[in-house]
Length: 167
Image (cartoon, rainbow, N blue to C red; front, top):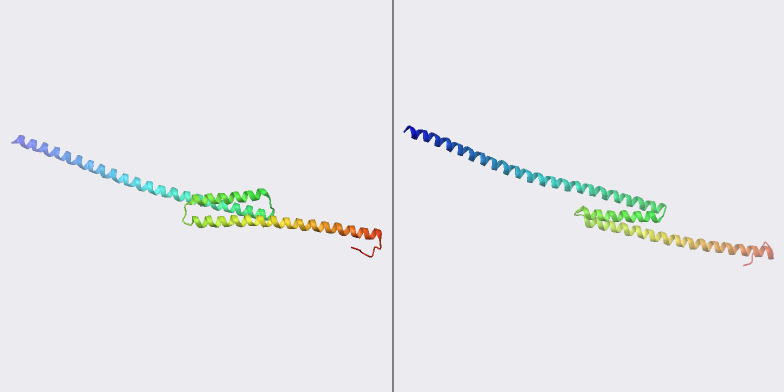
């Protein structure tokens, strides 16, 4: 009987060991599951953070590009040159591309406003060129008229009475 009791004690020790092993395995599985869940949550949060940072960066670049387009357009109004015209159109195009990268719900509205701004600027450039052509034509006419008037006065002064102007 004492052998039986010794075997029983050994049996209960081995059952306790198995029970502890099971508890350790279950604990290990729970900890690993918890770590995997935390890793997935952290990955998702980090991805959202990087998306937000990318959006902020793109928005900043868009604002910078719009400011540069506006400053070059104002510079063109003050001092029209091909370089300023090209830079203005370049920055408007950059703004267009950055708006497409923004992935915003207002993207279509922003693109529409950019297109209107570009068309308005190009219309100003066209009107300004037409205005300059008209001014040049009127200046040419004025020079021709002035030259003709001087010739008439000169002929009248040399050939006749200087007090009478004959046309």
